[in-house]
Length: 90
Image (cartoon, rainbow, N blue to C red):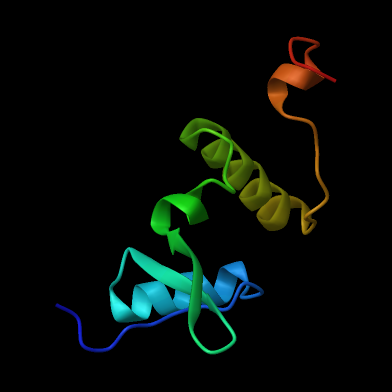
């Protein structure tokens, strides 16, 4: 059983939660209000839900960003290839 427990307030930010979970090597932690009243639990799975895109979509975005930054010196967004060719959603 864990002796020291990390807990987060309901207004804790994504970066704070991810940082502490990594630092303390935990996959979940309670969310508490006021005097320690537990109002929920946040888990690694909860944090991953903010990334609705597939690994392939994320990889393509990273490749585009690297190319734009290295070769054009810019981070401005361009439409993904399937959209530029009229095969994707607008």
